[in-house]
Amino acid sequence: MSEKRKKRIWFLPKPLLISAAASLLLAIIFAVAVSLAGSRLYDQQAEVTVADYDTKNSAITGDFEWSPFVITTSSKPIVPNTQVRLA
Image 1 (cartoon, helix red, strand yellow):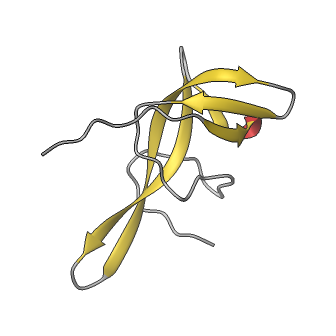
Image 2 (cartoon, one colour; image 1 turned 30 degrees about the vertical axis):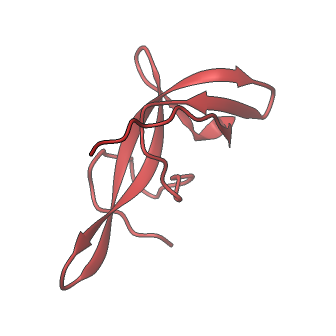
Image 3 (cartoon, helix red, strand yellow; image 1 turned 45 degrees about the vertical axis):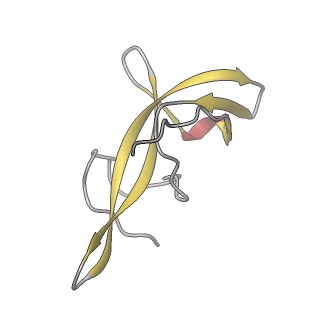
């Protein structure tokens, strides 16, 4: 039985949104369970829509599953679907 994703509004600092050609992206981390090695973490870019904003924060919505981790800084360029390590 599939369940529809609920549209929620998330509040984030403005610098976390990545400007793309015609849209805004958010870099999030999702986990993939591997039987012997535990969980592996990969990054994913999700397209978001800004519902409202002020000088510091943005209220966003998007059709994605929320992750408890949002990529805030990176020592290398963010490439979608690559394995990441939390520091």
